[in-house]
Amino acid sequence: MTFFDFPGTLKASKGTNEIAKTGFRVPDDQAIDYFMMRFDHYDVTHAKPSRLFDRKILFFEDFDGQEYFLISDQNVSGVASGTPWKHGPVPDEYAITGLGPIWFRVDDHDLIEDVLTHKLTFGIKDQDDNLILFETGEGGNGAAIIIEVTKGLRRGSQGYGSIHHVAFRVDDTEDINAWIKRLNQGRHRHSGLIDRFYFKSLYTRLYPGLLFEFATDGPGFIDDEEDYETLGETLALPPRFRSHRVEIERLIRPIDTTRSDKPIKKEYFG
Image (cartoon, rainbow, N blue to C red; front, side, top):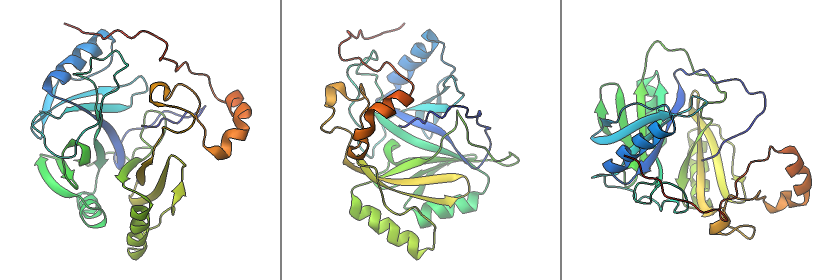
């Protein structure tokens, strides 16, 4: 998950035709209960746990008003989840294991269904009133989109507290090229292949207000500059920018990210 730090950015205006919420997967329903206590302890704005598509879910917000939710993997089959970060304060048995469903808020049901089922590779899995669950591939929380169909809302506008784009995983450059061919056949505008060094990507807009990215799994963020234990603690740069390190470090806002030399105590509540 990427955050952009743009000085002077205005606050987002929430509305329709936007990527509205980011989902995170947790192992089971007990993890949802744990995070509710954790959020209470740290004064994080959150709703009460609820159920959606027969899955326990917990909505919350950050200090910018950006919207998220935790979703339980209990009794949900599909794409396997990842490994939790073991060096943080959240107990391993409750920790987040990966990104979950992404949540779109839209006002054109027919168009979004056409985009997801015909232009992409999703199918309808379930529906609860104005909420529709789409899944692709093996399905499950790691391959899902939740659509909230709304009427009468103004279109959302970008700013801090909003989501710029969503990335869909693909295996490799061969898959990117296949999507380029498919988008060309449908005469859809796109960015073409972009080399991010850590991954290759492709961008396109198939629905107003929603920017989609296709991103390869590899080669990944662990490279010659960092290993797993120190990943994210220093400013890692792709090779073409490394000669400008001094200038770049002078411009960016310093953030204390070092943790490998600090003792971390697992936090339990209740």
